[in-house]
Image 1 (cartoon, rainbow, N blue to C red):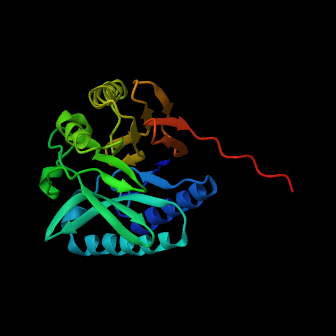
Image 2 (cartoon, rainbow, N blue to C red; image 1 turned 90 degrees about the horizontal axis):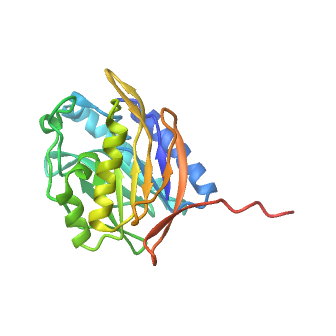
Length: 256
């Protein structure tokens, strides 16, 4: 699993897709099966009122559907994130792109509506669906705020999740790193599952995003923390039988 800690630009749909595509090419050379992006990577985060413009959503959805077709090449699958419409409502979504198709979609349940966040104004929410199945792995997928409330983790755990994956657009403040660690450890402690947390980097208006993507094992051991303030691609190996994560080392090139 490649953790794609990237710096998307709000409104730059083509540029953001190109950035994810380049990450996918790198992940392919690392023999990754799946790439996990940060929150709303196609639109950039936070997209604010762009989400209210149908022409923008049309372009996002066209780009996401076109990118899905590229996964027919046998390369890594993607958890691509974007604003997405269903039955006339708009959601903060994660799309599983695999084998040339959008295989599954999951929506954010807990929409933050405090401080710098006003997602209730632009998105709808939906009750938690069960784990997302990828190659016989049951992924408990959460989108940012979903991790901060234990009920989402509890539902995913009870539904048979084998690993928790959290995609984020979590802005920096001076206390945030300790808070994230504390909340992530709480979710691991409650579920006894490994947790993979992917955040973005960069800036948008008055917000800056520090990255610091994380991986915890069920024993609460922090096995990886991405560097802050820079893009980073890191491959983690998930051991399904033992439900643990390992740092992946690319095999050495063969001698000619």
